[in-house]
Image 1 (spheres, one colour):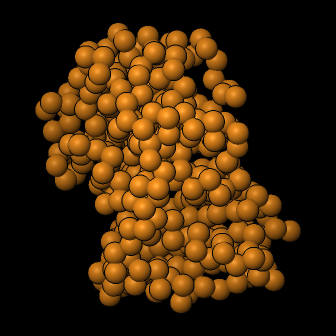
Image 2 (cartoon, helix red, strand yellow):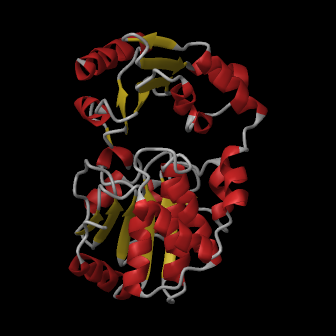
Length: 335
């Protein structure tokens, strides 16, 4: 059951109904939940006669592009912040942010958002955030933000088309590891069944999401697996990817999505950390837990966020220093 009240949903619906132009965005390096929510919202709201635009901080990963007809505009590529202010995205009636409530995850969009005086609707399921919205639909008990989007559609009376159902099912399936993670509950399965009834095809979507490796991505994964170290009697798995690994394998940074889960096949592993060197010198740290360790509290120490079992943060380099700081924090969690 959602933690969001009927009154809060009604307020969000009223904001959308009262807006002629709407801009939807999400966090940098968008995942399946972010892409699925944005694609579904654009389709459902557009059907009501509104003008809806998408703009992302970074490109859509290759394996989620099928969710979109025309893909979103990309800040710093297809448009700049100045173009956002002066061009076709200038002063929408409403901004909707999905799958994040943190300035730190809106790097290119943050300046525009801070200068904005109009309404902002946030739809998110993370436990940490900056309360960016004038109206917020936030439910940490939801396995994916897509479940909140589906609830919003019910309150608004929007029909869920086949395309929207595919997008929302992709969002839910990807954020639950195809229903393997501990966040999978009755609500998840009931919503998924409803989306299948609206046209989502699980075998087709599974193939698109999980049988999509390029040779480059596979080579990158083997590089990562070669760095695997087990700590704390095998309970903590740690891996890393260096910048040179991307060059040597011809893979891209988007190819790191979900690679952290590979080491969780080891039966005694209770938590995992993956460190990835970034072009700007920072180190991206992704953290996962089977539930016995609160990785969110570790990510928060370094300015990150997420969930108790899935979180992340960016740390200053070099790699070994970042690893040492996080491993010390994780060891305290285990103890």
